[in-house]
Length: 367
Image (tube, rainbow, N blue to C red; front, side, top):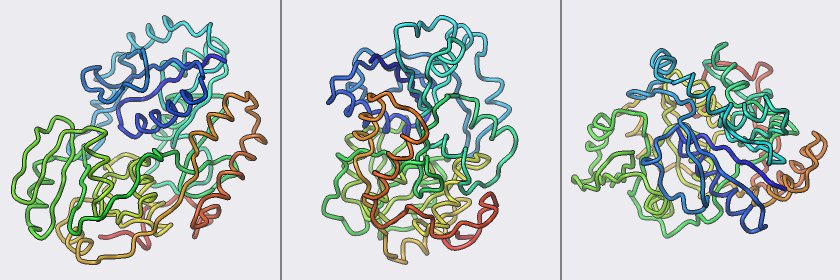
């Protein structure tokens, strides 16, 4: 079987998930070719696991000071180039196209009648998961940005029989915790504002990662550029994490039992919904905006951090994909197998309202 795997490179979560899948495919000798879009080639890092990969412009999103900018997103993308890339991509030699929110591979496969499998967190929104700040544009993007006939959604709880547990790097192992060490990853926020906020807590050491930063230590602030090795080293031995409400990093924090404070990106339905789900499941503290009071309370709370043990989803999913049976019943059986290994049991959400789509509220949210 020959597989074309498209990955949306705008966010590091998609890349992290793809690294786990690439390792699983390589261990099985699978014939997989990779295509990335949404980021300049010079901004990609730690890509050695993907072999002779390809990069295209694709479609991406404009974020400024913690907000998704819809108008700038619409105006900044090159749609004719995107259509040319879709038309030029040769998919005839592939048996299956796997896409993690990557639109070129998804649409090239769709228009040529190929089997397209959408993998990631976005397909989970096909089901009755907690949803916040939704609108028609967000729902259309979730469904049609990178469409697939087979849709494999990942989430922290089994809101549907067709949802699988988080797919994370099992190489991430906890080290000896350093009291007072906090890892910070807020790439869409104003980094100057983040530094201004955190410097007021000198009892804690903040290791701040963001694209474009130069390595520098400023008192209790330690600035670092994004890198897989450096970030994972700090993740292993930190006491807690302050980050956006992206799915993949939050999943890694839960697997390591890290205290988690998330700040969702404004006007971004997926992140607002993730924060809502984390609050409902009582897995994290969530703040709608950067707040001295919330950070101070969270740092002082020393609250218990739940540790969720996830199975090796990447290996099981690679086996499932290579077996070639993509019926819903087969996916549900895979879900049964994987969720049985999740502890504590998240197969059924702790609390799901009859209208699971509502604004953020309830336990876990800080004003």
